[in-house]
Image (cartoon, rainbow, N blue to C red; front, top):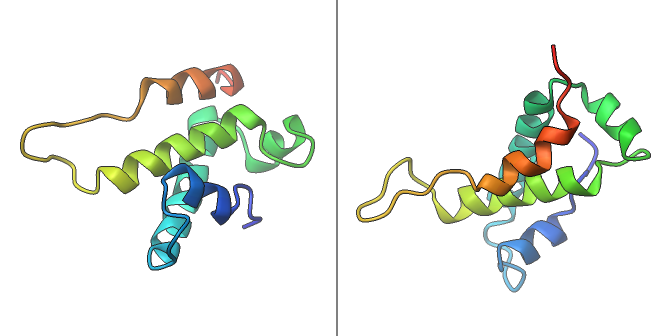
Length: 101
């Protein structure tokens, strides 16, 4: 898979840019988040790349970063005291690119 969102940007977004122990985990989260965004839009990756001029549109890159940040900070389905869902901003970023079936 093409490096649609750089690991460097992912690490900056989650404030893990001063160490590399989590690089494999963050790369996995990033690739999974790209897959989620593609599926959520009901489009192919190629369609999304065409919309962004051979790259993901900035809003969809941001949606990937939101998911990665959420997963990185909430590593379990439930925690004692506070449960957080995927940030609402994710839907706002992805919805304009969603192809209606």
